[in-house]
Length: 262
Length: 276
Image (cartoon, rainbow over all chains, first blue to last red; front, side, top):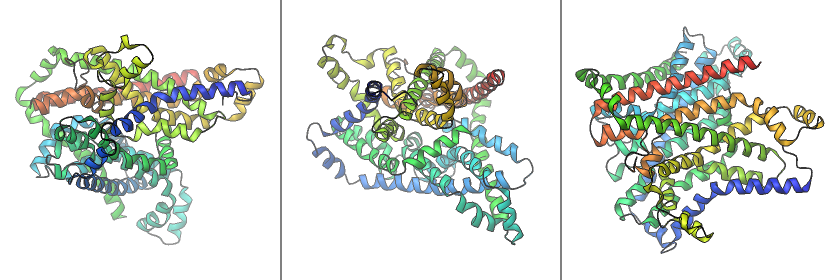
């Protein structure tokens, strides 16, 4: 993009880039450094030896898995329907769905709280799974619909001529072709579900039911604000998403870009 | 057919269910006191302050993110070394939860934290101070954390948008003698306008939704200097148990969010039409 044919300009640009990246790296370095301060790796040992810790991770993993399953089923069927089926007034439904994109979750606090206590889901993972999944569906549906729109109708017609039912052509034609977008949806949803803070904070009261995003606050209470342990816990909770991101980098960026560009 | 259509409708109804349900959940409380909650809001200086913070927050974060994101995107489209490494570094803050990074920022800006250490190390010890104690600075911190966290998204969007610009156009401009800055302002900037509008909408909604960062880092303080609508709703309805007032605030927030999206979208389209 920028002129890099002369060595001098190339070096200048490289330096500029490095300087600009420093503020982004600084907090990460401070985080790791801080977590090693004091008793060094001992901080990690203390955090890891906490008997409740596997529970936090297990809850987050369960939460993420359940949300992914729900969102994936809703998104793929909805995208197929909106894109390829003839349903009366489907555009109206689609816009209604998109309006939900602007819905801030904090708005839902009071009503959700009332509902959750009424159906007795308070302090169970379901109280978090259902709202988190519901809040993801609009965005992922938008993503997936754009993708399914790109699949030629002729393929479906050919399937129908060959005697396939709608369910069958969804299963055997659409699903195999939409694997890339499904991967992007899974990654996006995983990160959002794993990182959600507000709903677990509100709906999960006992440590046995809480998720990893609450671990740092838990340590603030437990260890009387011992920064090094809090930071060690933060590094540990952040690690899975960073690893997931690095492994699935391509899907992730493609998914994000596809969603906002269309 | 029944299976898939059923599921689609289930999704629509479920989402609709969630979004109508909150109104039903809240409205009995609202109706009992009539419009009192809204009247109270108009007189509540914290409400106006939080609106003002949201506006400042939006303008600052949007400007900085767009500038940074665009520069990063252009730089990483140039032939430089270690591009993947830089990309990953810029994007890691996006995937980390605010809950995970908040303790670090609290430490960096603490009176004996890293920032003051760095300032002392470079001989600017006089500037070292308890950063969270000043309202304006605390707000700046909240904004910088937001910028730190979401520039990665902006960058990825611009990066994708720039790869859609045809290289021939750039080459033609080069041959015509356009420099880097000229190319940036005359070809790339107009070329990514659609993306900029999308980012404006995302940032506007994001500013209205701001909750995690102020809640976890400053707790809305000192003396409401970093109070946003999101933290205010939480404080009012959970900490103070005034669910009705919280719900009234939520209604305003929702209207603002939808309104902002419509206004920005319409504005962007109209300008787009005039340019073409």
